[in-house]
Image 1 (cartoon, helix red, strand yellow):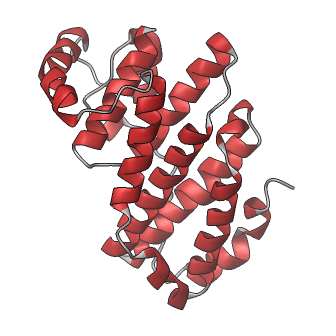
Image 2 (cartoon, one colour):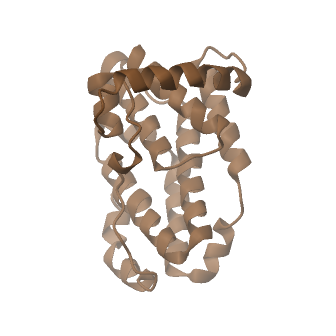
Image 3 (spheres, one colour):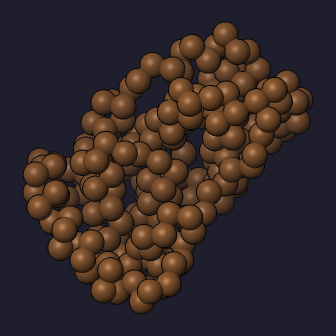
Length: 214
């Protein structure tokens, strides 16, 4: 299927470039949606492991920048995005590991001393989890960064020809146009600006939201 193939290539590109972001999370969410709506396929363990790893990678990267960035990404991923997903048809993408990690993130918001555990660079583990998932969906063929890199130029050229000159968000362009927007500013991210001193306020304001599975 063309839509899924485009998303998988984008995911492979992020892996080759060692650059995971909130965009990468949405790519996996869109793949899950395509599988569910077209084939009734539930996310595999490898896909759920990759999703959790990318969410952790984004959060840890934000913490290494600043407390403000960490709090914004925490709210965006662990409060809004995952809790909303847990109540939707996409809930099967959420693993027990992701729920357990959410508790760890929540503790890091409430207790600054716990944040040191999140600052370790575990990017290699995240990359490996995504590689395992890509090998799974590509018929267990070994993931080859060289082959992916060789294809990227032709792939990006095709996107530029199909883009029609106007920016749009990732879901709109892939689902409606079968292409991915190159306009980073248009990408939809569930992030609300948070003051770095607001950890205590978040601790008071979001406990019910964090218990969204109940």
